[in-house]
Image (cartoon, rainbow, N blue to C red; front, side, top):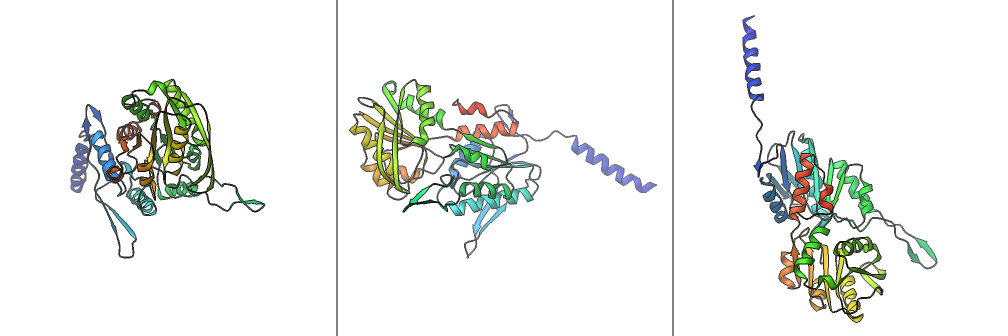
Length: 356
């Protein structure tokens, strides 16, 4: 019987520890218990801005490559029972960054994280969202993969419980997942930039460089109470535009091109020429994801833009040094607020129409 004393004492010590109040990270009176935010190597600057706004520190993680270029990720602190957020954008070395994200998700999941959320500001392979019909002689056929669906499957299998992204190239990508997806919009930041930096915005016209962006520009035009126009384009092949037709009147107005992304910038540069030919006084371009690959920078430098505005879903420091027309607006506030609301079980829909 005397042996029972030790277990009883042990239980009492354990109970006293469990009764101690949990440790919370506080910022402005907001409690954020059991949250860990990790950053991949694609965009550490954005990740740092996000955790600064949350009032917490980035989690410790070591990423390295073996001599055969395999990716190795080591999580440097306990995530057991934690609400984990991993920030990794689909930019730069897209395939390496995607693999790194998958490994980080799986590492946290098998380390008993309570929930793992992948924060992907720019979703990789988003343009490969459907099978396009391509004419080859007289036969209409396509053997193209739907790679965006494949990426969705990979994220789910790796162990992601939730996805936070921004301005998906095609909204139907949300339906590729069987887990919750929050597709945030840069629209509030776009509206704020227009009102603060374009004095003639009341005499502006919002223009979509393709039919797929019609819904996006009509929403912005309605919020600004201005008109909108549309450019219909036909492509010979990927990254090469064959012809453009302007639908709308831009004469003697400031034209603001709005699109979700720009890669080689052939489309927006041709669109800018078309708008000037149609009588526009000035041309601006506002893009969520500025990929700027290949000849993009030289095309923008030679184009007639007053400014090309992008968000920092993708690192832009190098591009801004090479092209003075490129300006960057920060969306870390929107993403950090989405993380805070998700963690606290609050509604995220407020962010769809309001800039904080």
